[in-house]
Image (cartoon, rainbow, N blue to C red; front, side):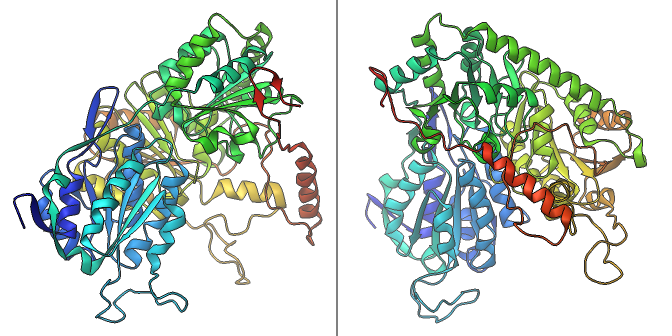
Length: 637
C-alpha cells in the first residue's frame, strides 16, 4: 500500500465505491445508490456484511424478509426517482441468490434499474464442492448465478479483487443509461469478497454520472414531423418513458396545443392528468374509448412505450389500412417497433422538439370531437357499472372499491398495483388526481411486487402523502412478509386487500376461453380427490396482517372503506384493510383482442367452440410492415 492506494477487501471496496456514486440531471444531483438491502448467509455475511459495518457510513442497510422482495423495493424506489437512483441488493450463495432472479426479470422487463450482488462459489476451488453449489456436468466454471445473464442488462463475475476497477464503473453506466437500464448483476465469489488488494484511492473519489437528455437527430425529427402533419386522425400513446423523463408537463402542453388525443399504457398511467384530450388506458385493459380511437387512427405517436401485446392488442388494435407509427424512445429497439419511423431521443426533449417544429399545426377537429364523444360514452358505461347493487353475497364490486380509493386520493399520494384484476381495472378507470402518481407494474405482471414496491416508494417520498397498495388475496399470500419490514422500519403503507376467494382474474380468463377454470379459486379438495374444487377455503387476512404488527380491519361497504382510509391517513402506522369483493362483476371490456394459447382440440364442445371463436379473431392481427419513411420523398416504394 502507498499514499496513492488503500488496502481493502473486495467487499469493502465495493461498499466504499457505491456510497460515493451520484446521478445528475437538469442540475439536480442525488445519490445513485442511497442504501443496500441484504439477507445474509455464509456466502455474504463475512464479506459484504462485514464491509457494510466497516465502510458503509453513508450506505444504510435494510433487512427485508425475502430476497425477491428487496429487488421489488428497489424498483419502487427507482420508479419514484424517475430512474435516477436505486438500491443495491446482496444475497447469499445458492437459494438466496436465485431468489433474486424473478426480481431481475421484473427490473429488466420494466426498464427499471437495480444493482444485484448475488454471492457465488469459491473462485479458488481449494474447498471442493461447497455448500449450496449446484454441480453441472458440462461446464466446470458455471454456477446458478449464470441464470442472471439473460435477465441482466449487464453481468460480470468478480473472481479477482482488481476486477472491481472495471466492473463497477460499467455497472453504474448501465444503471443510469435511459436506453440500457435494467437489472445489473455483479456476481461475487464468496472467497474473493474477503480477499484484499491495494486499490487506487482515486477509485473512491465521488463521481457524478450525468444523465443527459438526448435530443432527436434532425433527419429523424423531420421525418416524424412530416408524418404528423400529414395525419388526419393522430393519436399519442404515452408510456413509462414519459414518467422517467419527467415529461408530463411537456406532454400536456403538446397534446392540448395540437389537439391530439392521448392514451396511457400501464407504466404511463398518470402521465397526463386533468386534460380534455385524455382517453384513459389503452389496449386489452384499456377503455373502449381509447380502443375506438386507436382502431381508426392513421398516425400513432408512441412515446416511451415498449408496445407489448396488451398495448397493441396482440398487433390487432390499429386497423386503419394506412396507419403509420412514430416511435419516440430513448431505446432504439423500442423506437423501431411496428416498423415505426424512429425518433431516438429523451421523451421530454423529443416532445419539445416536435412541439417547436409543428408550430401552430393542429389535428383535424373530427378526431378530437370523436375522442370526446367516445370518452363521454365510456364514462356513462362506467357509471352504470359502479351503480350496480353491491349487496350480492355481501360483497362489493372491485371497481367500487377502487372508486372509493380514487375519491380519497390527493396530490402527493401514490397507488401501487401489479398482478391480477387490479392493474387492468386501475388502467381502465383510475383518474389520476393532479399531483398524485401511479405505479402499475404490468410489464412482468409480477405477483408479490406490490407491497415491497410500496416500501420503495415510501423510502423515496418520505413521510408525505399516502402510498396505497391495492392487492388481491392471491398475490398477498405470495409475499405478505414485507409488512413486517414496514412495521420494523416505520414505513407507512395503506394496503387494501381484495378478498374474492382466489385468482379470479385468471379464473375469468379460463372460463371465458375454455368454459372451465379448475385450480383458480381457493377451495378444498373435491370428493373424488382430483382437483381443488370442493368447499371454499377462507383465509383470515385481518389476523395475518395484525400478526405482523399492522393495524388491520375489514371493510364491508363503501362507507366503511372510506372511513378506514381516512383513519389510516390520519395515523402513522401501516394499515391493512380487507374488502370482501365479488369474484364476478368485471369492468366492461375494452373489446381489444388478446391472443392466447387456446387448445386446438378438446373433448368439451364448449371449449372447442370458444377456441374456434378465439382463433377466428386472429384474422385482425397485422404485421405493420411498412417501408422506411424518407422526409424528402415520402415513403420509399
